[in-house]
Every structure is written in C-alpha cells, then in structure tokens.
Amino acid sequence: MIVLKPAIMSTLCRGFTTSANVFSPQPDSRQAELMARSLPKRLPLDGVRDIVVVSSGKGGVGKTTTAVNLAVALAGMNKSVGILDGDIFGPSVPLMMNLTEQPLLDDNNRMIPLVNYGVKCLSMGLLVSTGPVVWRGPLVMSAIQRLLKGAVWGPLDILVVDTPPGTGDVHLSLSQNVPISGVLLVSSPQLAALQVTKKGAEMYETLKVPLIGLVENMSHVVCDKCENRIDLAKNCTAQFADELGIKVLESVPMEKEIMQNGDLGTPHFLKCPESKFADAYRNLAKKVTQFLDNKRATV
Image (cartoon, rainbow, N blue to C red; front, side, top):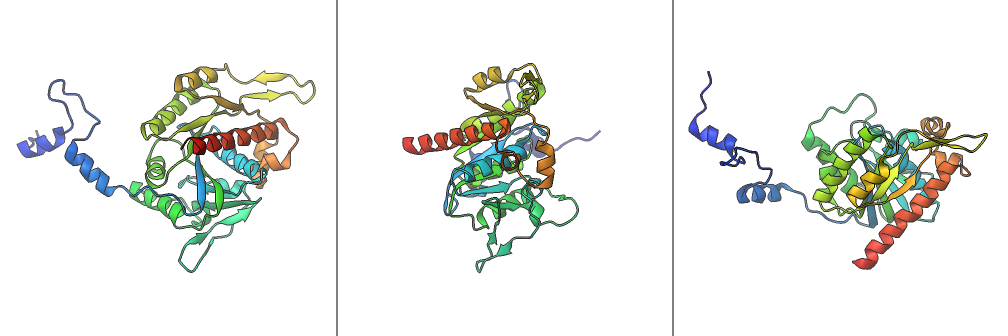
C-alpha cells in the first residue's frame, strides 16, 4: 500500500471542495495569476481585418470542405481572403487547394503564404513533407502561433481558419493569440454529430468568442432527374440551433462530384458554379460578410 505524505496529499486535493469532495474547475487566485502569466498576448494580425474560425467538435462533418469553399466564395465577392489550415495532425487544405510547394521566407524570416484560386494558403502539410506529426500540446500551440504570427498574411479582409475536431490545444491557442471575429459551426444533421458540435459551441461561448451560425452540411440530396429533395437524416438541426441561440445559415446538399473535385484540388464551388452547392456557398458568404459588417458597426 502506498501512503502519501500530507504535503503531497494536500497538493493533489487542491481544487476539490471540502464539503462535498467534488472537483472544482475554477482555479484559486494564485493558480489564475500563474496561468495568466503563461498565456500569450491576444494581438490582432497585421493587415488582417477579420478572422473567421470554421469549427465543430465532431470529425468527418466537412469542416475543411466548408472552409475551402467558403474562402473561394468570399474571394469571388472581391474580398481579399486567406485560409489557415489549423489541423496540425491531419492537414487537408493543401490537397483541396492543389498546393504542394513549401512557402518562401521574407527578409524577416516570416513565411509567405502560397496563393491559388485567389486565396492565400498556409498549412503544416506544406511544411512537413512525409510522415505523421507526433507532437505534444506545447509544440502544437507553438506551431499555431508560428502559422498565425510568423507569416505575411496581410493585407486581408478575412482569414478563414480550418480547425481539427475536438476542443483542445488548437482552439485554445487560437482564442488566446488573436481576436476571433466569429466562429462558423459545421455539423451534419445526425444527432450524434450535433451533440458534439454543441460541446464545441459551448467551448467558444466560454471563451467569449461570438458564434456566426451553423452550417448544416450533407443534409440532403437532390435528384438530378426529378429535382426532388431527399433528406438524409431526421432533422434535429433547428432544435440544436435554437438551444444555442444561433441560426442555421445554410443547408448544404450532397452532390456526387464534391469528393472527387476536392481530391483533385479544385473546390466544388469553382468546378460547378451553377450547382445548388455553389448557390448555398454564395448565400453563406453573403451571410458571413453581413455578420462581420454588423459586428464592426456595433463596436
């Protein structure tokens, strides 16, 4: 049997309430002071007006597809746009934006983002040629800081940030390093996806980052012969949006060439501009810019 010394036991039990022996997530005053010292300063990116984070606690709901097609749709509105691939472990933006070269450095050792389809792009996938990235949290947060503040992003109207699933280091590092103008949530209409997306939304609300709205992705298909709409799941999206106090901005249909075009490095929005998918992203881009304009008007 291992017996802990009183001093060690006291340290381990710090943060537990003595009355009910329940863990308290709130740090005491000294812990809060130490945590504040270690946090980076939240400073705006030079030359970047707005930062929009595309997020969902759930994986596999189409965050990267949303981020890429939103970016090119915004560029089509004569906005200067960049996209930062915040998925350190599974970067997909280089594939979907048809980019393979490593970024060059300027005289100040800052990375110069690559440009395709009128959008500036930067990703860990452009910096690590082969093999997986096997890093602990501090290295991940350092990489995000480097991609954000160690690059020549400006001048940009909007920087779109694609994020990994979950509520971990990348999301915390983003919110601690730069002022985020808003978070665009992405989910499929499946209950399992919506429940996890809600957790991601609550994380950003805790961090006091505004929510732009929800994109319901892969919600339905439209028959190319009879034009009938076929929903792919029992729709619970509106209910979850109401619980979060946000709007469902768009319901994006599944189309048979979306995955193929993404794998070939051409955003579906550009490849099939007359599709219902493209219409949804044109409307989404307008709603995102309207949110950002209204936000600036109220500041």
